Image 1 (cartoon, rainbow, N blue to C red):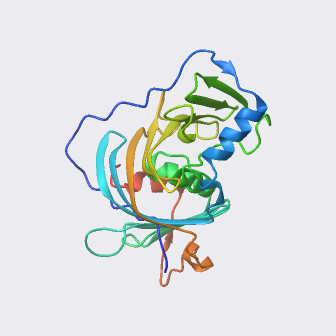
Image 2: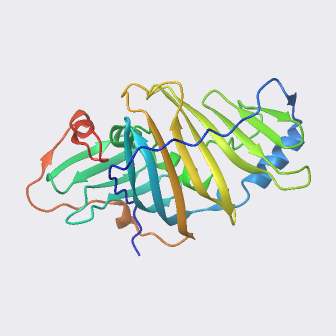
Image 3: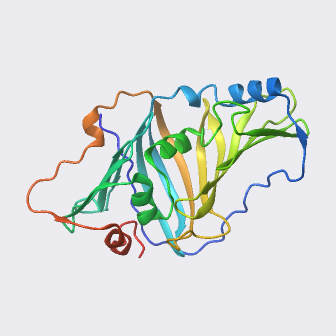
Length: 276
């Protein structure tokens, strides 16, 4: 069955945003290579093995100061494939987005307009403010966002007491946490720095079931990047399915008839995510 990432955004009443997760500060202590490697392996034992993920998602929050609320249906495949279909309450979808590797396409059926061969992160940044490419989207939804694959390969590991461990690199800070010294480690947060998009943002993960988070928050931090599109989105996952086969045509868009080409700037102005 074809699974898509479906975004249906509608304006909602203003509400106070929940506080950000309180992360450890200070110098901490340098974690040994053995301890850091073991903790990372434990925290990513399930999510690192995921080949495909599909789920139903409830989304709420804000983009560019406008409140949004909707339902999502998610489909991603490792290493870097994704599909997004923004379904409206009535009529054709608002947009259909697909990406394989560094090649993305977005189609606006209502306007009969299409953007082909764009960078996935630039296209998703244009519609939602979040500079995610297909691989980033896969890692984020599985809760393996930005976790270093090799401890010591350009990353440092710092321990804060018995229950926090932070991996820091040039592009991200990834935080692991456990309830007590005998409980398993989990990835709970990642702060990303995108030099290409000029934005710093955070992902927070909670309510893991079978190793996959059921609650994800994505929020821009000290600036909104070059686009000026700040975001604070909360995703609640349900009906999660792991390693369901997804055919290659899931990640392709076939259009018929006369469609007009559009630019990235025109996409930003389209209000495709429900805000302009």
